[in-house]
Image (tube, rainbow, N blue to C red; front, top):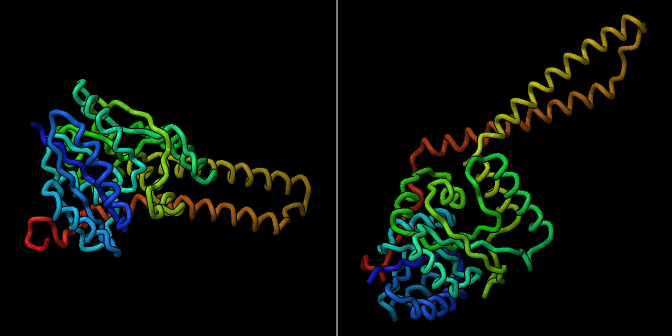
Length: 312
């Protein structure tokens, strides 16, 4: 039987871990032709998440776990889970049950049909604040216009992949990771399965609007250099406008003496240009900071302990 590894990143999910395990195990028992291992990745939780995971591992030898030395973020947890997964098939999903385990048989069937990846996308955003939903949709439109890598609107991290695709994703060693983009960039045949937006089974989302905004900016910087081109174009436009303005002022002064006044408007123009300059410097700074972090060659995560190492 082929081994299916189900990777579940967790950060302060003490309340959701047992419910997630029971829900996934109930569906896993219906899967034919595969044996299942559950790989929980504790992303430096500060509550009882790790204890809850260890309790599951004590009762089920199919449960394995990794625990980080601190919170490294979901991207690092996904990478670690895929790196330590033993299965020829690997699924990744959230612990909050917004990724419905009931879709696992359909994902597995897609792989057996010849797809390399079966991924889930949500078709609505019910329950989300209106401004957050609007910004999310605009982000997908914007990044798909800026980047050659298509990122599907509503794409979840919930997906089932072949070992070949997982190895391809792991071969992308960049420190600044945007998994939705990486999954698309590596290619392979992907079947999209649609689902409605579901509420969390318990607890609160760790993704505030500001964190999502920063994550979106990371995605744009990781998969597009268009902002750099926009900064260059703005610079050229401002140079052209300033040149025309200088000619206009000289001509007006020659025709109507004493007309080169207007300090208030001049200050406004200076502030506008200074703002645009700072905006462009900020864009350059984002790309420079990403390059700086990449050159450090720091590991994506640091393990504190894991199942089977004598600490469990």
